[in-house]
Each structure stands twice: as structure tokens, then as C-alpha cells.
Amino acid sequence: MKVPGFLKQTALLIFSQVIVIIAGFGIKTIQTQTLGADLYGEYAFFGSLTGFLIIFFRFGFFNSMQVLLAATNAENEQKRLVSAGLVLAIINGLAFAALLFGISFFINEWFNTIIGDYLKLLAPITFILPFRHYIYGVSVGLNRMRILALFDGGSKVLFFLILLSLLFLERIDLTTVIFFNLISTIAILAFIIRMLPLSTHQLGLGLKELWSKVKSYGFNSYLGFISHQSTYKLDELLITYFQNVVVNGFYTVAGLLCSPMVMFSQSLSNSLFKRFSKESEIPKKIFILNAVALIGYIIGIWLFGRWAIELLFGDEFAIAATYLIPLSIAYFLQGLYQPYMFLASKSQDKSIRNSAFAEAGVNVIGNFALIPLLGVMGAIYTSIVAKGVYLAMSHYYYKQYLKKEKEH
View 1 (cartoon, helix red, strand yellow):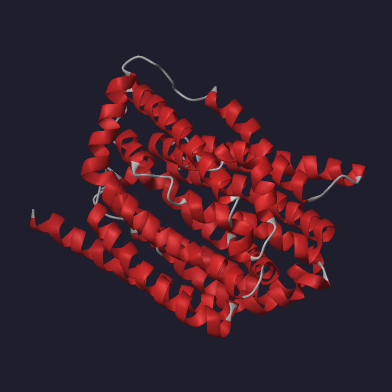
View 2: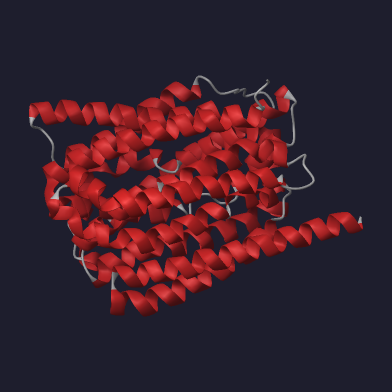
């Protein structure tokens, strides 16, 4: 029996995500055990801050590139789009590094942290962080998921091996952890660029095509993306501001255990993106397969989550286990709406934007109202409601799309 192509692609991504998860747990175990709760909290805040700012460094170019690549099989067109995207990714990364360097002079005072001292030193190599937008767009648009798998899995494995070496040499501190995290990703990116279909021929035309798509699709999609993601990531910054970096560290540890349940859903939907652009609707079996996988993982979290945290991170991080059950509900809802990426493949930018705006409204109101009162639990309750709203609106716009297509 012939295995469908999308299942092969999904299996490849899942395999890479398993590697990412295993390496990620190994990385976090070393970090938490060697840095301790205080310095790990600073490292977690570095991730929260950069993760929040990266969201804004997409500008509609890379999702526009993704849609254009999915719609063509012409090799010359693919080369000029991928090449144009790389030029924009380099400029984007340098601008991001410059922003972080500027912020480093103020961040310590704003958030009662010391991470600004490290940013002054390491900001130049943070240019790599926004590059995942580009790699994701190329991989999904070309339906070559091995590129994304290598970028995510390769960088994590390399970083884990470096940390093991540093652990043996007893040279682990916050500077080396951040530095080698970034260097690992740069090394893998340098290898991946050699695999990409690149050409300087008609580069200007590729840039014009991307700009045209940004104006017709990418900007609305960008607005939706940043409102969706930035307000979702806002919780970590507010937890740090109203409580401290240590509590935010506990919150990110709980998120680390919950996040793999969304990885399968994202892998499945990413693998289907190019196929979605030619399909009239989402096959029902995709919804069923996605739901079964999510239910299985959430049961595992509820049964073994506390044990996993104590085993991997030690008693010092045991408080993170109290967040697992409610936080897993938010991640479950996030996984359920991943197949509605179908709407992006159909350039339904306004539907995506409106759903994201609604979720953003819930996130902003909920986080500012509840985090000062309830701390981490306020962020979790807000996330559950926000993800539920996004799921409901995605389903509504999907049904509206099907209705319009039938009328035509």
C-alpha cells in the first residue's frame, strides 16, 4: 500500500520534533540543574523577550513567500522567490539585532533583571533568531519539510552536545548558554542555505512579486499574526513585570511539557499546506487524526506531568507542576485549530486577521486584568479563553468559505 505523501512529510516532521523534544528536555535539565532557579529565570526571560520581539519581525514577507511558493511548481519562479526571501531575512535579522542592542540599555531597569548586560555583549549574533520565519516559509511553501526539520532538530541536537561538553568541562554559565544556543542555530543555517534553490537571476522581479503579494495578502496576515502571537507572548513579560523572572521560569517549564502536543498538529497542517491550496475542503480524517493525537497527549500530561517535572528539573521546579493541567487545556485548544491553516493556503487573509484580532483582545484584557491579581493562573485562564475564541472563529470562517465556494 502506497503511503500518502503528506503522511511521509508529517512523519518526518514528527520524527524531527521528537528529536527536538528529547534534546530540549536534555537542554532544560542541564540548564536548570547548573544555573539554578534564579539564573534560569534570567535565561527564560531572554527567551520570553526575544520570542515576543521576533513576532514583529515578519512584516508579511515570509507568509507571502510561502503562499506564492505553494502555488507554483516552476523552478525558476521558486528560485527567485527563495532568493528574494533570503535577502529580506538577512536585512530583517540585522534590524532585530540592532533593536536588541538598543533595548539592552533600558531593559534591566524596566523589568528588574540583569539580562541587559548580556544583551550588550551578545546582541550582534541574535540576528539569527528571526530566520525561522524564512525557513518555515520556504519549507512549507515548497513542501520540503526536511529543511524545517533539520533547522529545528539540528540546532537543538548541536546545542545539546555543546552543553554536554561544557558540563564535562564545568564551564556552564548564563553567557555560554545564550552564546552557544545562538551559535548552534547559525551553524545549522549556514549548512541549510547550501540546500536551498537560490539564484541571483531575476532577483529584483522576485522582490517585486513578494511586495505585490504583501500588499494584497501579506499585510492583513501580518497584522493578524502579530496581534495573535504578540498578545499571546505578552503573558511572559507581564508575569516577569508583576512577579519576577523566577516565576516566569516555572511557567516556561510547564509550557515546555505542554508544547509537544501542538507539534503534531502543526506538523500535520504544515505538511498539508501545499495540498490545501488545491483542495476544496479539509478532509474529515484530518480533524479526527488531529483530535485523537491531542487527546492522547493531554491524558499523558495529566497522568505523568508532575513526575516528569520532578525527574527532569528537580524539586526546585516542582511548583511548575501545579500549572500543567489548566495550561494543557490551552495547548489542546491551540492544537485543534491548526488544520484551519487551510484558510491561509486560500489567501483568506481577512478571516485570519479578524480571528487573530478577537483572540488578541481577549489576551490583552485578560492578561492585564488577571495577571496582577492571580499571577500565572491569570495568564493561563486568559489563554484558555483566547484559544477557544480563535478556534470558534476559525471554524466559523471555514464554514463561511465553504458556503461561498458552493454558491459559485
